[in-house]
Image (cartoon, rainbow, N blue to C red; front, side, top):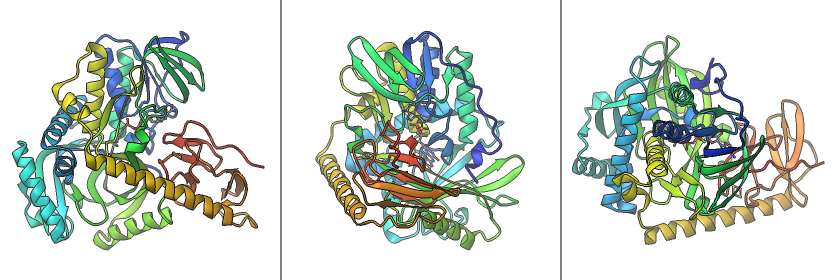
Length: 491
Ligand SMILES: Cc1cc2nc3c(=O)[nH]c(=O)nc-3n(C[C@H](O)[C@H](O)[C@H](O)COP(=O)(O)OP(=O)(O)OC[C@H]3O[C@@H](n4cnc5c(N)ncnc54)[C@H](O)[C@@H]3O)c2cc1C
Ligand code: FES
């Protein structure tokens, strides 16, 4: 029961790694950001190659809920409060540019893509107050938001703000379109090529990959969070993982795209796929590696849907993560003076905002200039509250590191775990033991990024790092996050 969007999808047409090992531009990642950069650079006459460790859209982009909207919960007020009014205005302009570009890549004839009203709803009085603030700020910044009528809300909402004329899409339809556009413009898209190291200097980048050593004059690392990180971006972002489920509904039960602004996150949208109607619901966000039982968190979300939409039948379920920034606005730019280009910190709103960062990076790489909104957004000064948030976040990471070590020292390793379970056992280094599909495996429980002690994810049968969000398969293979290497095998 994987992602609705990937169901029945043929493997992407992808290319062999070009024989020439030296490239003008290497874009590492075939998610939305990387594909946007590659397409825009090709259109500006630059020659790029796209590499991805997995396949196009394989991580967050292809697992998203596909809402392209300028009304994003209470994000504008969050950015204004934690940064400034001008940064909130620049963020909105960025999303406007990104959304317009995405819409130009697709049409309402594309499956799963349609115009829709976006709603932010509150179920408590505190949430309703936050909505008041968002409504006022959105109008001040020129967004034509309105108060929704009670009948527009699919759940018992106290108040809801609406923005008409937004767009929802099937993210894998988008990915396939961008891959096709990139390839038609002469950009090879190479899958199954993980980058394991980068050495940057004023003469370019030496890029070590699983398929060999490459040189790039320009390197874009749009890997969700940068896998090579001189700017310590992982210390300024926090990874948050959400559960998503698609329910077969027979007929459309919900009109428009809805997002809660208080309590547990609840995101709802309808989707039509293969002639079937679905209700797609996401929520129960947790910091990666922090949930006691991810399987129980997924079941809680399913129960919430069953209580409100009893006829809906669970058809697909999956989970995905994205990275929150300190102030709610994304980061994009260069890692150090000669370092790679990167973009991250979309906080689960990286379709419009991710396309915008791709547009800005491509423009700066091609012409040396950024759009005005990008200067105001990405070059914003840090604030005192940023520093406090970073300190708190890193203190929390250290707490988890020490807690994980204490649990590892005290853990028992008598019996192999039951099917679908994993635990950290005693040992130096501590050992992560799991049983999946009848096979008991033992790998190091120490994250290859900066030594976090891993936690078992019983929903996805993976080892997840509570420090900065790296994830590994039960056999130790690195799946995502800032770690570059697999876990070592233990006897
Ligand atoms: C549950 C969920 C729902 C969401 N819904 C929405 C929504 O409705 N609307 C919205 O605007 N945003 C949404 N988002 C956010 C949005 O999907 C993301 O912000 C956006 O897709 C990020 O794109 P990306 O290109 O940065 O990352 P990704 O799509 O994750 O791409 C990163 C790519 O890098 C590759 N990679 C990683 N490491 C390496 C390596 N070492 N070597 C080579 N390749 C590597 C990966 O394989 C991957 O393909 C959602 C996010 C989540 C988690
Ligand atoms: S992701 Fe940083 S230590 Fe694991």
